[in-house]
Image (cartoon, rainbow, N blue to C red; front, top):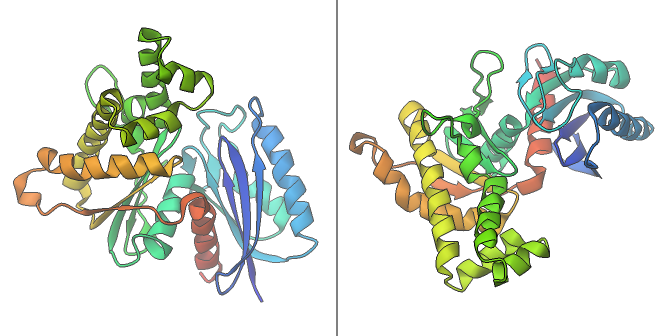
Length: 305
């Protein structure tokens, strides 16, 4: 039996998964990333888990999904936006020295997109665009079961799309971080209100979801403005790539679902009539397993090349 290893290296967690040649996952290992951890700290954690796994498995190949731009051909990380020590690091060689098997490096959103396209919401579609709303905003394009790579670093960085000439990016106005910032701005205006109490308790986004359910006008405004920005950015994706399906994912699934409903209504206002009907919009199915599942798919595919 062949075994494959998939790893996700994010800014908030490290996730490793083992699968056999039937793509059955036999083991998951998750570790939190402590604020202030460096790349070296994360490599130490990964090394400890790998050493333990190698007492039970001999891996045929592996793939890692990295939270930031990568040079996928050379197996190097270009940089991390949130963790120091990853700039131009040869991650593939580092892993091969420890695992003694071929290793591949991909952007994490690309791998999540691949998993959703093959095993999740996009199973019956040829061209799938994936967008994840988290601390930042990531994207990936899949065509006929393959990750679309452009020139180095070759990621579908939709979060970095500029929405105006002043430098406003999509993730600066529509990420979870941006939503929380907007909530905090409203709290400053009404420091004694229920929203301020929720933020003080660390429940700003949860409160927003509850406020939407209660028909709160401020919550509706925040939702509509965020969804409008996302719809505008996705209109560029439609004009350039004409995907069959757009998959939306997010660290707060309830918020993503509500945003998707508004995006579905607004997208047509930004797309030229000749490109109608619009691609279907679906919610991601694999959630926090998407990156490692995509990594396992790449590891298995490449092992037979």
